[in-house]
Amino acid sequence: MKRPIFFLSSTIYDFRDLRSALKFTLEDRGCQVLASEFNDFGGDLDQHSYESCIANIERADFFVLLIGGRVGGWYDKTNRVSITQQEYRAAYERHQKGLLKIVTFVRSEIWQLREDRRALEKHLQQLKVDESERREILDYPSKFTTDAEFISKFLAEVGRNAETKQAVQNGTPMPTGNWIHTFSSFRDIQDALSPLAFSGLSAEEAAYSKALQHELLAMLSQLVAKHEGKPSDYRRSLKKHMTEYPIHRDTKFDDYFEMEMEEWQKFSFIMFQLLGVQLNSIMIDDALKSSLFLDYDPKRGQYTQSPAFDALYKILSEIRAFNSSNTHENLSLMFEFSPKNLGRKTGQVHLPLQKLLVLRGIAQRWINIVSLAICLVEYLEGRAFKMPELMPLSPVEGMDDEILRETLSIEEVRTALGI
Image 1: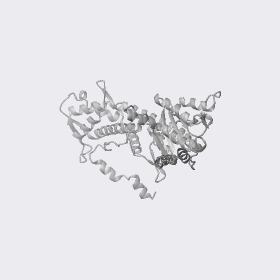
Image 2: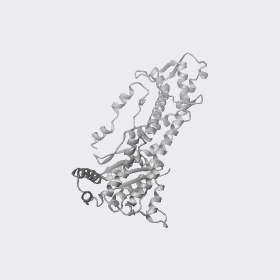
Image 3: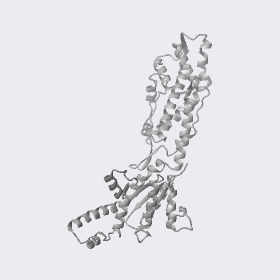
């Protein structure tokens, strides 16, 4: 898997701490970061450091430009082109070819200073101040910058102001890559860059997510059987069967359950797909201990279980129940009451209720595992999580309510034990 490469462009003196924090954060997310003050920057030793910086931009997927109050070193002093500005121009050429994305940040006080200077310039024009005096006033140093004119022109270039104005006048395509984000804290920058770095996942988390998805999809391939050469999801048919032939609580468990032979054959045919199926849950079991299913709660200052964690815990429970009950012995009812053994294909069939209950229970676990696996795969692919509607634990109608009344929830356990 190719790691996204970020190139950090800025004056180093006034952004040293911020650049270090960005490099650490992005690399922790699995990205590669090119920052010239670090030993892993690389470059041709036969080149000047400026030329090496510009050459390294060709390796980058993202060009992160930080604009503050300093000009930095001059790349072309005669024409007042700084090295940071030249890096930007090289990056913009690659952006126009679709080879790189540009993300620009400017300190909020510098952006405000620019707006204030623009307003001041308009005011001085109205006052008809002498040109030399006007320039002296506009170029007067502030505590934020010693070269307001350069910074203002650089921001206009990055914002592609002249090109935008021309495009509006001529009806030509607008320039791209001209978004400028203002920032006052590191969090402002982090929020803008996080979606670009594996959707907020570290390299380890991203790899783990893919492995977990693979296991879930492999599981679905065992449970979504082929019928006449096409994949068939039997959940709807199984639900319909159990709805039309419910087992009520007042039924005696040593009784026999009666249904039409044709309906029994349909149900048996579907259940035959499970012969010999045992589901692997190594990654799912391990995922309960990973950070993939944790959300950070800034108010409480701690990680909490995400809604998807409940689905992960539930599918593991369902898999264990499925594997333990999906045995040849528990499926033997289908052979005992097959048309061949009964010697007929029509009429009523009377099935031993206890064995049928076990078979129905396996069918319900099957339905739930498929539903949960689908929602978890979608969640790992970045879609919003939505818990699916699940089949009850018991195949007997209304029995789940009684089971729930006798089962303590986690919150009830905490309250009872004072945890």
